[in-house]
Each structure stands twice: as structure tokens, then as C-alpha cells.
Length: 509
Image 1 (tube, rainbow, N blue to C red):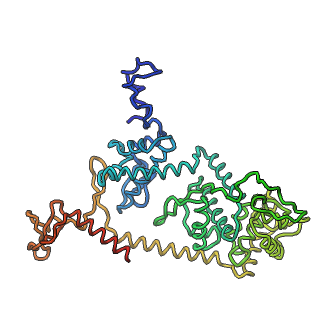
Image 2: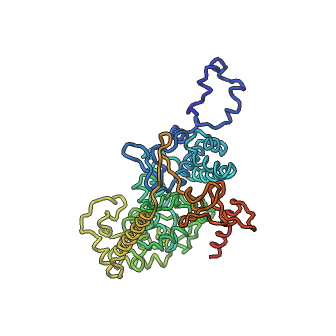
Image 3: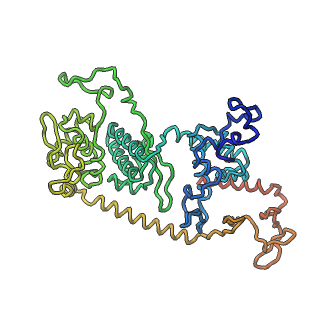
């Protein structure tokens, strides 16, 4: 199928009026979604398949130095590779305004290499199963397209990340669990900036080391805050030496802050009125300062903690804040604000500034001044990181980050050794050249009888004695069956009964 409209290049219709083609030419073309309506890269993916190996996964294929896709020694990941190509085509069709019927036509066309995975499902399991698979992929593509925005340039990427950072900084992160989730989200934001987009790869150990927390705490932040809140989505689980693929989203709106114009009047501080979730101002912290401090042992659990990070971030963004103002800007309670300020003052990190509090001039040496307009200024005094180490030693948390990294390094080494041992036990796949293409030879199935174990009449030979085994027979499709007076089931029925029994046994186990 060409990329452009074939009717516009047909000489038989050059003399037809341009304003209203004939019905034979039009037919249902105006209502038909074709390859000419998707980007050129998507059309090439549908017609030619994944030639560059962009969607290849694991050890199934690799890109050689000549630019061609070559198969690896182990045979795995073929189905995942095909599913990735199918999902990419579905996203292109969804962004171009297509329908699930148009996607099915593209994938099931016999000349389209990009739909080989769906065609294989239709050939092996039937058209109904393939149609159901296409509908599930289409639903996932629609959900992804509706919740994401297309970025066309590199400046657009940084603009999108800057907007996301501002949204994170102005979102209230209440409670210890919320403040821990902010540390995890800040770690993923740094990974996304390094990757150049919201989609990035990171393992749990990497995120835990960057956030300065344990893996168990990290998983709780994923499960209870970030994923339900719509901040973070895991697109693909990591395997082997590859980390998981994540996507940073904009998060769901906070029901407590859903009204831009509250119906209540702001509280009067002179009258001692308390702020409510509808009247309090939004949070406002400097996430860059939080991201650079959260890895120190001084901010681990049992030391200064996450509340100190929030107060320092809020004071760095807006100095001279009162404890009542810090309740809203740092998303902490009034008691936590007073307790944290007293603790930071004992370490010489904050000082009174009029009616409020501000960071001391050299509180954040090593990462910039305490003023928000000079975050990247060079330090003039000794590095404050020596002070963080002294605080961690005083609280008894010194060495936690180093011990965590050492543990993770040991776990990675043990996992790589296990993968290597497993790869050595695998049987390498056989390949052959068919019509100029290298294809994988399927491994023999366990229920298939080798040719030297059977006779021309279908009897089964004993490989030790060489004599036929009474009561055994080879079916016409090469599968071994046992003949008995009470056996009246076909091979397909026997296989289905075996699968059902295995499923029941696994459920009971």
C-alpha cells in the first residue's frame, strides 16, 4: 500500500472533476483510514517492520555494525518484540485519529510486515483471538495517548519537564509518606532530565540510592502514593541488566485544592483564625535543593528526616517565613514546623529573620547560596558536606548510604552470576536462511516423537531394545498417544484436560 492516496495519481481519474469524484473512485475512501494519514515513520513500520531493531527487547535481536538486525544465540523475546511493534503502530494510529477497525486492517494485511505478530495469533488461535488482542492493544494505546502530550523538539522536552517540576513543587506532600514520595519522584525527575524526556529507564536500586531510602520504603511510595496519584507509570518491568521503563505523568488533581477560587474568605491571622484545606495557599518548595540534599545520611530516617528537607526547600524558595506560613508552603503540621525549626537552629542552619525564619548565609555551601536567585553560585566558604557528615555521625546514621550501595552492588553481582549460569544451561537456538532471511528453527516439543523412535505403521520403538512398545501409538501429527479400551478422547481433548488439571493443581498449591 503506498504512502499517498493512489486515487490522486491514477490516470483514469485525471479528467474527473476535482471537487466531486465519481462514486466508483470515492466509494468509502473518505471514511477509510489509510497509511497516507499516519506519519512516514509509522507507515514504514507497518509496511517493512522493525528494520532498525528499535523495538527489539532482551536477547532476541541486536543491531550489528552494518545496521542490520541479527539474531542472538538464545531464542527469547520474539513475542515481546512483536507486541512492542504492534503497540507502537496502535499509538501512531490513535494519535492520527484512526479507529480500531483501521488498525485491524493494517495489522492483518498479509503484505504488512509490521502486523506479523497479530497475523501469527490469527493463524494459530483464530481470527476472534487476534481481534480481541488488537482491541486490548487499542484500548491501551488510547489511554496512553489521552494521558500524554506529544513533544516535537528538544526545547519542548525541557519545557515539559520544567512545567512538571513546577507542578511537583506546588503540590502538597502531606505526611511522612507524602514527603518520602516526593524524594522518590525527585529521583525519577533527575533520571528523566538525563534521558531527555519523561520516559526513562531506572531500576529500584538506582531510585532508592538517589532518594536516600531503602527499597522497601521505595516500593511503598510507588504503591500507595505515586502510582495511585498518577505521577509515575511503569511501562515495562526490567529484566536482566536492563532497568524498568517509567513514564512521568502530571498527576491527578488534589480534591482538597480543586477550587481555584474558594468560596471562603482567607483566614485573618490577627484574629487567630486557622487555615482550612480550601483557604490555605499552595505548597512552594525548591525541589532542586531537596534533590541534592536527600542523598546525605543526615537526612535519613532517624536523623533530620524528610521534614527538614521540606522546610529547607521552602525557606530556600521564599526566605523569612513564619511557622504558620511553613505549614502551607512545606506541607507540614504546625508542631512539625516548630520542632524542625528548633532542630535546624541548633545545627546553625536557620536563623530568625524579623517575624520569620531564614537559612543562614552558609547553610547550603556546596550546592549554592541560600538565596533562590543564586542557586548555582560558587561557594566562598568550606564545603558544608563536612557538616552533613558530622550531623549524620551525631545522629548515628553515618554510613547508611554507603552500606546501602554496597548491598545493592552485592545483589547485582549475585543476580548477574545467576543469569550467566542460567544462560549456560540454555540450549542455543538453531537458525537457517530461508528466502534470504535468517529465521529461527523451532525447538522440538516434548510431546513429539523423533523419527528414529517410530515405525512406518505408527508403532513406538523402545530406544534401548529397538522393539515396538505394546499399547503405544504415534498419531498422524507426530504426537505420542496411549491406546487403551477406556480412552476415547482426542489429542486436543487430552491436552485441554491436562492443562485444566495443571491449573487446578497450581491454584491449590
